[in-house]
Image (cartoon, rainbow, N blue to C red; front, side):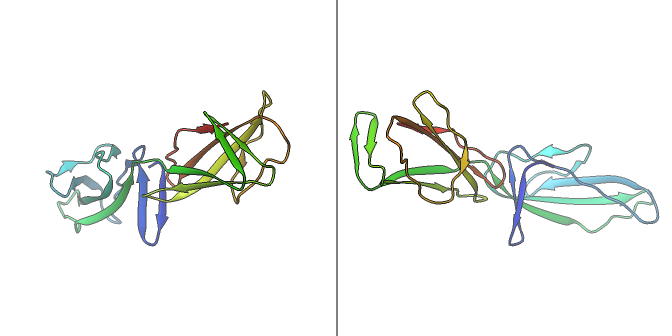
Length: 173
């Protein structure tokens, strides 16, 4: 339950996701469902649960018994827990002069935003160019862009991965 992304037979989930186990029998009622992690004791499934906060592959084993005492075959669900947000790189291609915390660029200079994610991958990069006190629209980044009009800009940008982990918005002037 929650944020997940399936790719090449792998299931990526966020730390906000819960595991829910459903079981049915075509003839009699299901009596109970048990589950466990690789190196833990089995527990009776009562409600959806969070995964332990360990990045990477998490194996969940589960099984059920019916009202006649018949046990099903033990099954395994492997998910990859992605706990980290993306990281980004900001670069200017072309003429640029930096003084203290401000960068002065040419209208022909290209602004390049790159995002990297070690888990589920990048879903989107969002940016906004505020000119002076005027807030600009948020845009999805697709390719390098330039700021054609002269003025002071604050560029805000962030990235989100495929399970919804969002990095803290960055700002450059």
